[in-house]
Image 1 (cartoon, rainbow, N blue to C red):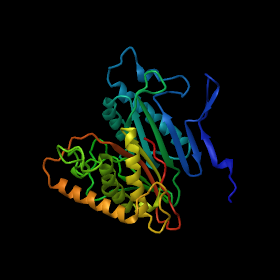
Image 2: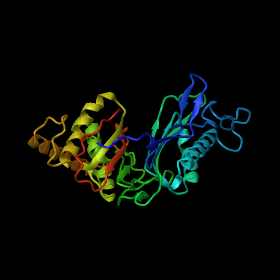
Image 3: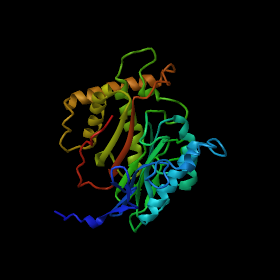
Image 4: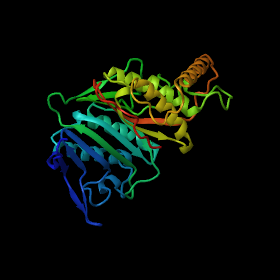
Length: 332
């Protein structure tokens, strides 16, 4: 077994938070990876939100508070990257959280300006609240320290559209790893709402389980093509983070994803959460496909249903047939 070396893990720009004397690092360098989590619109990580962000005397002058908050976050992320020997071109993933959906467009504008066209796979989630008074946005980031064989490469999947306001990559490779953007069961064309193949027929309360239909669509039409374009597959997935709207959806979602990953890992031990026999799985999948085909032909399909699931952070290895990857834990 390789001996663990603490020297391979380096805190970046550590500070001491006065309340509780808590030692905090806004970034960590581990080997050739940089991790930055919980980034807010602070100026020094110690004294709460930056006055330049809140600007109570002129809160609406010249730029929105959301834009100022976003700009401050990217300044902070750039400082962490520089301290770790990297820059924005080597970011492999960003995830952002908001308390107000109106923060998204100003954040996207700040992100486009800061990342200079290099927008990695991304997931956005609405939250109820954050730690600091006046905080409405929080960002976490993964980046690499560039070196031979450790550069990031953006990957696109044919036929998949991304709205220009977001502009993120569907997938990205960094060394042997693949990062896939968060995906919903929306149609492959921008603006078409929830995909008909991922929806119940209009006017029906059953004929499929909504979260299972969405999961199948996300995996087959979104995740698998992105992994394939990056030279990987479902059999190489090592981490999957999922956001569900209803906790009751977890069990059926877990069944659908476990089935997909078990089928992808042909020859491996079946996932312990998969209880159906092989024949049952094939019949169930055939029935789902038949219903999906019927819905594609039905112009009344409900395209405005709310999505039940978002598959957020998919991480996989490329070209690693000797690695047996099991089903990762997912959190609602």
